[in-house]
Amino acid sequence: MGRSQETFNKKEKDKNKLKKRQEKSIKKEERKANTKGGGLENMMAYVDENGNISDTPMDPKVRKAISAESIEIGIPKREDIPNDGKRTGKVAFFNSSKGYGFIKDLETQENIFVHINAISGEIAENDSVTFEMARGPKGWNAVNVKKN
Image 1: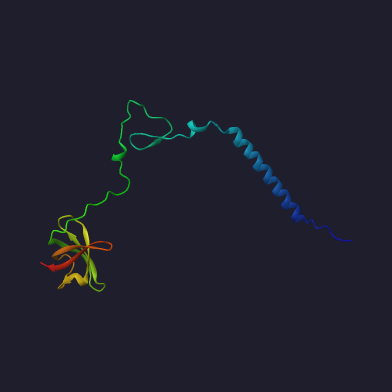
Image 2 (image 1 turned 30 degrees about the horizontal axis):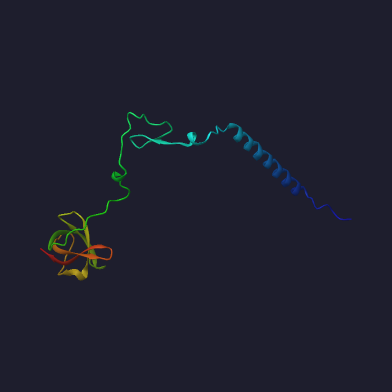
């Protein structure tokens, strides 16, 4: 005669599964009963003049008309810097062991990359330099850099 395959643990697991299933169905019915329903009006969100999100529409008297062309998404494209010859700047950072650094242009206050191969002579941080601009693969580079 064989023993029953249903052990105490199996019976307890089955009871727990059934109990969880019943609790889940009860919660589901409660959610269905408590939802407001009603479609689009309950899902609408409005933005006020300060950019805050609210659930009430704005007063039409206060509303301002904005043209879509005036909205800028992201960073505005920078105008190309004209390559008009010599520029002056100050060395903001230079690592001679790695062979590169940055020069702060005195006109535009931008940091421009400089490589050791584009330098004639020795430079160090806070040196005043003259240089020319050249377009590199990752942006503007300083070339023909000379210490003042």
